[in-house]
Image (cartoon, rainbow, N blue to C red):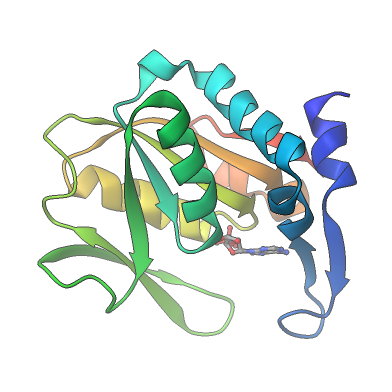
Length: 174
Ligand code: AMP
């Protein structure tokens, strides 16, 4: 099966979560299916090539699952990009606007070696605000973005154009 079809077969649409009007894309069935999860991780690695990155950054929380699997499969390390207030040492932070209010993401200030090549991953690309803040954060912490992948892209929210000219890789675009 094509990887896009595989992802499509393992996502559940949940209307009005976490609030009315949002169609939540629940990828837990993909995470829970061993062969589908492995195929998804392998497809992201194949897209970029294991030699193209030094470390994998995952966005809290579902990005952690994907980042850890890619890192283990390629012998690389993981850097968690966390919500504000979770990291114990000196951090670099980026604040971005949500539909209502704002959110802050952080990494440790020493999370990356200077120029270290960072593959950034998350489960869903929606408006792109989270990804934009993360990519900026990684660079401000000294990393160099080697690629950005998601399992699922919601194209109608135009996150891809918000991140342009950076390339976005999605296993499935809907
Ligand atoms: P955004 O900043 O709008 O691109 O939102 C991306 C982040 O919010 C990701 O970490 C996703 O896990 C989560 N997210 C946003 N919209 C959805 C959705 N419709 N279904 C599932 N997750 C979503």
